Length: 383
Ligand SMILES: Cc1cc2nc3c(=O)[nH]c(=O)nc-3n(C[C@H](O)[C@H](O)[C@H](O)COP(=O)(O)OP(=O)(O)OC[C@H]3O[C@@H](n4cnc5c(N)ncnc54)[C@H](O)[C@@H]3O)c2cc1C
Image (cartoon, rainbow, N blue to C red; front, side):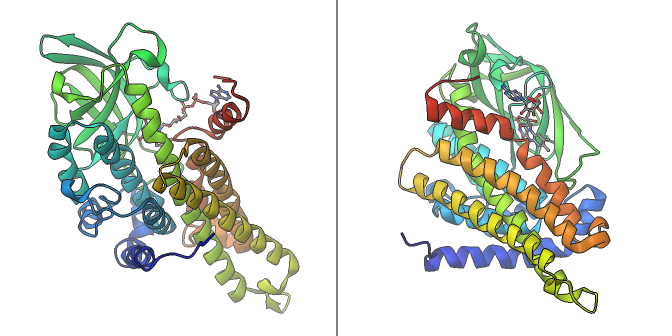
């Protein structure tokens, strides 16, 4: 097995590293404190091709394989998880789903805009009453002549206030549970759709996370994405690939924690020598390093499976479960290396822990990943 990157993959990784150094790193602390990433970053991400990775070039995408997508996501996550999330959602959950399930008309209408950064997408699945149990969502789309009329509410929606289009999941049929759910592409300026920013997040503070309220939102039947009643399958197929992207972002957090901790351990002196020379500090550093490599290898395996057209959903859950828990461990260990300075936001490791913490919660909590893995192992669903 050859784990070396190809020349193209290394070039994409370097492009992302340079992009982060130039466009992200100088602003990270200010964006975090202001709870607001500068929106111009979206167009810059589009210009450099990061919002079109793996999307066919005929729809404005920049092509590339899924390992390249992981490399970019890792570098962005290493720089700022709020920026990484913009790509993971607008490209990973929305544009890639339009590419996979959209009609020719929908692809032509949305993909060039999403991949260039002219427009941004959000993924509207979670509701106040249904998070892990997303198949029981309550938002309803009722057919009225050539239209649907939608009523309901969504919460915790990443990119929510920035989005130009909402990939919305709503109940269209009388069938109970996930069988009655359909997917729609709803322009965010449709009358009756209102958005409110959620403030006070522990991490991902720069990211535009929102509540959406839909009151008599009228959309044409042509807004339906994929067949009616297939919405839950569409959401789950999007999230399976999305979990690889979250895992890659977690590898980025863990790598950033390692870089910062190793650098600091070499500079800080206690008891007359650099703390890097104390064995228990080396233990902390080596624990982080092993987590980084294990998380990265699990994540790359998912990319490899997807690019070879193989079944990948369970591997994606394994990667997301391990990498998210590892990112939290690594950031926490890095704070320990920094001592009291790790607790102050002039140093990067506190933010890494705050940003890492959500990774075990969204796109399926760690408990939900274990149920998915358990179902694959036993053939028995515990849901
Ligand atoms: C910052 C942020 C951004 C987000 N972005 C988006 C987005 O863009 N789009 C979107 O649709 N959603 C988004 N989410 C929502 C996220 O996916 C949900 O928060 C997540 O699915 C968990 O749902 P919940 O918060 O309702 O928790 P709950 O489902 O209420 O879970 C609470 C606890 O119960 C456990 N639990 C639940 N069911 C079971 C079970 N069967 N067995 C064992 N344990 C169980 C969970 O693991 C968890 O520990 C985001 C959330 C956050 C915080």
